[in-house]
Image (tube, rainbow, N blue to C red; front, side, top):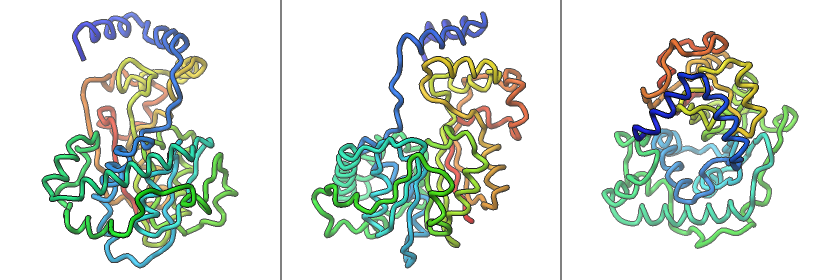
Length: 320
């Protein structure tokens, strides 16, 4: 961040003018309500590889042919369809709103498949040279990555050159969903995943209970949670400083995206209370935001660990 921009931000914050600036900006420059980056094929492919770098050992030799379940896919279902193609799984999706776009999904999927073929077409060095372009390179589990095993696992031979709308038939897409939508899927999902979605969920307690209900006996959960402010503050974690009343004021403006503002430790607490067993937590930190003395009194009770203040995103893997 350049020095002039930082000076302006610090001045607005120190003069207690930040909230007025954000409301003015959000109302004057209305931002599109984006639903994630999986509509870009390369992005979807690299996310898929990142997932597998952590959970591939479970897929190797797996004979379970149940379902893959995604929460909050947004406008593109391409990551879930990659699981469907490579692992012969049914695909179920739950979302708060019917964002799904068929044409965009197929475009993203075919781009992702072509990119995967490209980066696995040569050797391991070629693969990692391409992976360096990924925004998720820091999450990629290189220590457990076996290039040849991955290439064998994905089985590129026999794949179509291009998938059409026929692949989308019989998908279980539930949006907006409620508890009744889930009755036929109890204990059916081998893998439940979400990508930058759970920070937008209002009732996290119910959602984690639902994930537990949907998970099969030996299934895994992979939740990648984004803790950045999404336009609700000039600082990446500045939303932690808003009181509930101030945050309600921001909701009335054209904010970028609503977020629940719950820190990582609170997510972990709810997952464990729901009967889920945490297997691994991989978090990334930065220290250029607010400090613990600036946390709103309304949010202090949710901070089980103040180290959460520096976590900008995290992968949480759990089992039932």
